[in-house]
Image 1 (cartoon, helix red, strand yellow):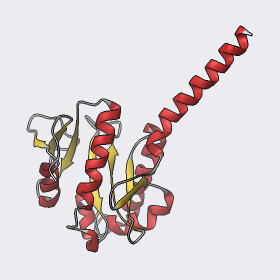
Image 2 (cartoon, one colour; image 1 turned 90 degrees about the horizontal axis):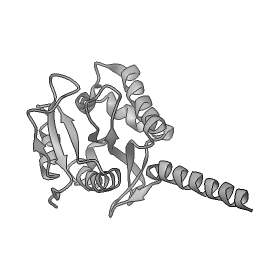
Image 3 (spheres, one colour; image 1 turned 180 degrees about the vertical axis):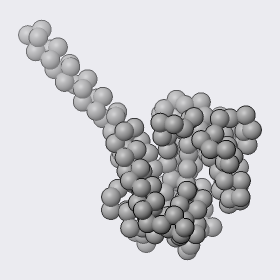
Image 4 (cartoon, helix red, strand yellow; image 1 turned 135 degrees about the vertical axis):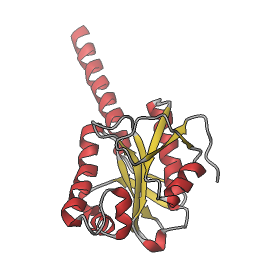
Length: 196
């Protein structure tokens, strides 16, 4: 009887650990968006963005070509497998269209986890989707992971992303380590509330 009890307890503990490990892979919603883990089915929309001129802010762009765009998308997919968290595809609920991505990205050689975002289609730009999704991701991860902060690594010429980071309550951090010499670091703190 005691052995059965302990086996049952061990099975329950394993189920709880598995549930905890995969809970970030579950889609969730905001007022206007469905956020779901980046998936292979998002490759076409993501690659179209990464080979566009706007993809240059994400290490891609027309001069880098489809191969670079594919590798970035493959990295986003693999990140979920390694960390059990990552980038969410943003689906506009009203149109059921994939419009961008927001999430946490932390490759092995980066100093700390990054909150990143991209809006893939021009019609979706300037409508507050990145802000809405980034707020939801910030709240979810900072609360559940108990991280004191997250950062956003932003090209100093990307004025729209800098404005969004500041709107989310991030502060420019001149002392933080960076994954490359050209990016700026904006630090998001748990106790700072993003403005609407």
